[in-house]
Amino acid sequence: MKKAVFLFLLLAIPLFLSACMYPESERAESLMPHEDQLISVQDGVNKYRNASGGLLPIKTRDMDVDQYIKYPIDFSKIVPAHISKIPPNAFETGGIFQYVLVDVEENPSVKLVDLRIPETIRTVNVRKSANGGKAPIAEIVADNVYRFNYNLMGFKEEPTVLSPYSGRNLPLVVTGSGDVYVDYSMDLFTALQEYEGELEEGQDIRFLLYEDHPVVPAYSLPYTIDENREPVFMND
Image (cartoon, rainbow, N blue to C red; front, side):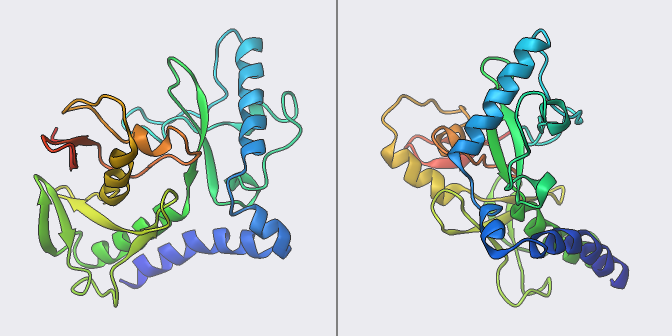
């Protein structure tokens, strides 16, 4: 237990210190997505791609990781050759966002991952490790998707993450294999009410969240629609 808590603190402290080292105005800059910065990085990616014969300025990741964090941008490949500096809100400069690429095959597009989300998931994993690697189940949400009993895990209140889309506090879920994810059901329900396009059962609908938003729904399970056009977890 002590080792697990110590490991978590060791991982969290650098992020906290890096934010504290900046003046208040710069710290606020590091916590917000900015369209001009996204445009600048997109321009740098496009220039690198053109100059390299189609290669992308990304870091190597295992291919089985979350699709939204699979292609992190390697700023050393575009700074200063194609853009002047790394954005203040990027993790590399003390910000809370990881710059990534999505749709790399058809239209490589720059998006953001909010790194506060994996920090919250990490706190749950630390408690889970202290509980023998298991999460006590409170409710079955879907096939192989569960709500965990946060009281039995030692939490005073349910751990949640702040939605970048709605500002809601979103709950977490755990799978039978013990992996923890954000539950975007509420945000997807809202998005579906506003979406007028065609959707099919079995189609991953998470694009509705980031199609017109800079932040991607990383650390989530795939969702589709049911016969009532409501969001449901997609079965494997």
